[in-house]
Structure formats: C-alpha cells, structure tokens
Length: 371
Figure 1: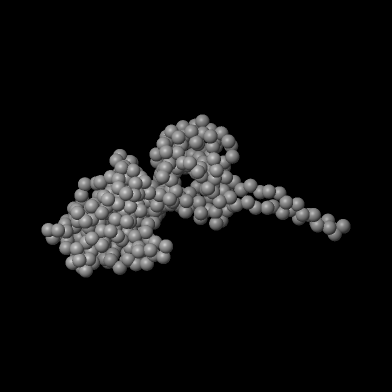
Figure 2: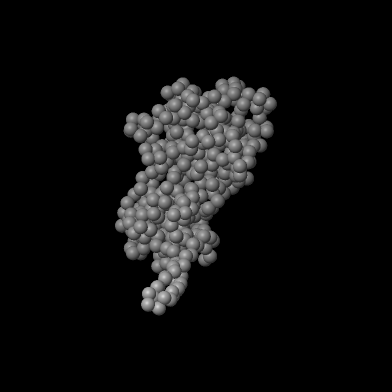
C-alpha cells in the first residue's frame, strides 16, 4: 500500500571536533520519524466530517513534531476489512500507534488489541477497555441540542412564519438509517428544538427525518434538500450527511433562486445546520474566500482534532494513555457548535442568549440531554 502521508525526514548531523588536530568530521545518519497508521472506513478523508476533522489534528501535530502518518490509498469499506488491515499493521511492528476513527471500528479495535497486546492503539468516537488502547468519546448530543435551539429560533424568525405557504418547520436529512452516531445527533437536536419551543413559545414543527441512503451520494442529497426547501417549505435543515454535503450545498443555492420573490425580498434563506466539522465557510458564495452571509448557520462539531492531538502528543512523549478514555463534551468545549463567524448577520441576540443559558444548564446538570 502506498502512503498519502507527508513524510518528514530529518538528518542528524554529528559534529566531532578534534582539538589537537583542528579537524572537523561531519557524518550524517538518516532519521526516520515515528509512524502512526490511520484506519477509517470509506468515504474517508474529504468527507467534510469527522475524518477531515481528525486530519486537522494530524496537521496540527505535524507543526510541532516530526511524525509521519500512514493512510492506505484504498480504505476499507467494512469493519471486517478494517480489522484485517489493523492486524496487518500490528503484525508489521512498524507503527508507534494505530489510530482508528469512528465508533463503527470499536469491535475491530477491541479484537486486534487483544491479539497484539504490545501494540498501541487509539480509537476516536468509542471506548475500548484495554491497557493498550486510548479512547476518546464525544457528547455530540449536547452540541446538537444547542443546534436544535438555534434552529427553532431561526425557523420562528424566518419571514412568513405561520402562514399557509410557510409553516416554519424544520427538516432533518441524515445519511443512513440506524447509524448510532447520527441517531445521537438527531436525538439531541430534536430535544433542543422541543426545549426552545416550550421555554420560548416558538411553536416550530419538525418534519419526518429523511435519509440519503449513503454517506457519499451528492445527487440524492441535493434532490432531497431541494425538495424539502422548495416543495415542503421547511425553514431550515439539520444535515449530518458526511460526504454527501456537496449535494446539500448545491441544493441550498438552487433553492434560494427558486423561492418566491416576496420571500427572497423579505430575507428568507435556505438555512442548514451542518455536523461533524466546522463547515460554516461552506455555506458562503465562495468557500475559498468566505464572507457573510453563509447559508450554514452553525456546525455541530465533536473535536476529533483535539483528540488526535491529545493522544498523539502524549504518545510521542512516551506517555501513551492506554486504558484511558478522553471525554469531550460541552463543559470542556470538545463537543460544541461553532461561533457564527459567517452567520452573525441573521443570528438574533435572543437566540444567542438562550444558547448561553442552555449551555449553563447542561454543564451544571440541570438539563440532561439523552443520546
């Protein structure tokens, strides 16, 4: 397998000074930085979601340390294939750490770690109870709750709220049925909408969740997103769809052009709340040079990048946190929503104050968000 990783190679230069002779001998030895193998399932990097988020953590580590990452050119498509791959990686003995991304690899990591007790493993998004495995979990339902609160306010504040042709309903578009990660996200999001409805008397509805049927089907994602906005007249869509996100983006701009002129003049926008990575820039007219406004109001982010940095940093310093579970949540900021960098022009003060209040209530335990 070939590697996509950027390999940093250094030369160790040894200088020996011979005082009596006055000569200097220079010798060079090749230095091979420690290697970390990364295992994730398709669609993998470029998914605008957890894998790209984790990749950011790798990039951050590479700024401060000489380390190389091995990512297979051909990613496994099933947990069984990933398990076989991890067995091969562990058998080679070439990797300081084997890093698995996603709760769908929990059983595979547990199995391979038991077979190779001397190999160091890490898993992001799940917890494996083993001395040679470091784990990271994320309270994504807490962050999604805040996304639901914001969605309720935005839907209520949209033009024509409550009219016969614009009900102020919220749509949900997910990737595949039965995925536990997105199920937690959706559960937290719905609880946030319901809490805001009850506390602030917003009376916003939620339509039945639709599914793309894949993590990487931009065509279906575009069709479903456009249909919800234009035919079903939803105000906003929560879209944890991973690599299908380009289809959502395309539909947002198509829908904006298709809205009735009265609604466009009044300021109706095809708003989306994203998930998995900070995609606020992705809802702007030009993601390469983003400026206000963004049709993506905020993103629900479990900071896989933080987990990568924390675990790899400790491992490189010979403090591998085997048996530990790093917990990222609203209290420490490791699972949160983004800060409205490109959406502040239409985010109301009332909604941001409500979000701040809910953060306090969740952190202190007054409100428990149920995954």
